[in-house]
Length: 232
Image (tube, rainbow, N blue to C red):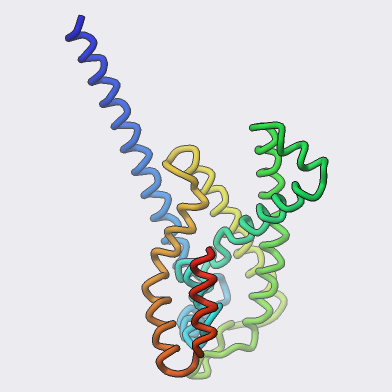
């Protein structure tokens, strides 16, 4: 009996190890897909000119670029990252404390949590659209230090294309985060944010230090950037 019990325990342990390995491999594959997406530029954007233009920016822009894993610097399809979803989730949590009907739904347990999460995902879409419109509009007419335009063909067609591409990128990351949560290990959205920070942190730190030493960033701005990073 003891041998049979040991054999069963060994098989159970091997099965758990196999499942753990599969989950880890799934997370690794999903993060690789995420990093590949960070290097695919939005149609109509000159990635070289965009990178050169972003290198001129300092302070809060560098921090946002760090959280996107460098995707904002290239204006890739995943430049917005999951920030619209995070913002929508925060808004829903605040509304749940203000409106009794939402607070009652939140107390329904798992079903209530799913409803709140679903509304958060829906709310992320208009937020992503607004952010994408702002970025696409602001980049028109911008040039790199050598005079190369960041946007090759400015106009409404570019804005429309950029909005669709950036919003779709955010929706894809939300779906990828859900897949990691269900089939991988840990919270998928948190892992995506963490992967972006790890990828963009070294370059952002170096650029921030160089900006401070060069005099283009004062001490108060440096403290503000550090405080915001620590808060995140």
